[in-house]
Image 1 (cartoon, one colour):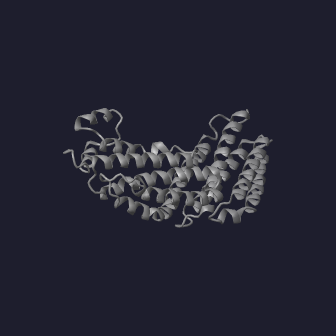
Image 2: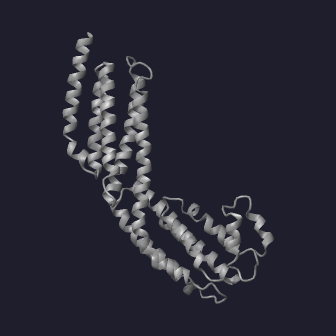
Image 3: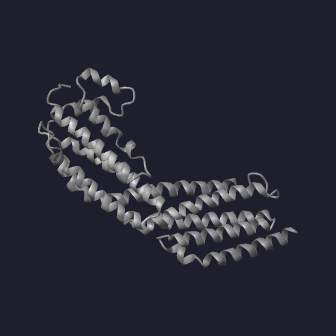
Length: 305
């Protein structure tokens, strides 16, 4: 095939591909990507790439790659900056976009190696662009989840306030001491059950993972408002945190709940030491700084840090 014929083939193919992508232009302009929309778009892109490779023309394949990269970057731009308010549908849509993008990158890398007529490293730049877009989509997904969780956290404020006013004294009233925790578990269960019905399994697991982390962080932040603890109160606090961790592990077996409560469990250990000398037992794997340990021990009535 002559260079003129090759150029003409490239022009025709690019024009056909552009027209084909115009068929999904409305979906591209929509800030909320649906799961079906993502599947349709990536099926079209994969088909275009496959046909370009079968043409045996490097210029056609190169142009196809460039169109795909530009198309996906534009779609990502619209999705990333579309709205300040994050909806459940946008979480599902962005996850579908991420999943399909991963599959497309893998397909592009695999096929680029299979076709012998393609010069080595010809598409490295385009594939790196897709990989960079994949990284950006992953980061944006986490940002969207955190933003969505920010809207959920106020629903737990009553539980955190109840925890802040809990008196961990000598009185052994387990039912009273756990009011804040049972309220928190009830609210969490209600919110998570609702989310589980409307989110894909992967999105739900990611959202629950980040939400439980923020809950653990909020409990730790609220500890600054607690009153002085007695020895018996410290034991009750550790029992509460362990019970809460156990209940959440049963509620959310798909995520690593215990890792989110590691700092709180270490705080409970510090509060229950017999003496300052016992702190050496946690120094090797302790996540708490010396300053944090010093502040925690201020809650103990019988130990001077």
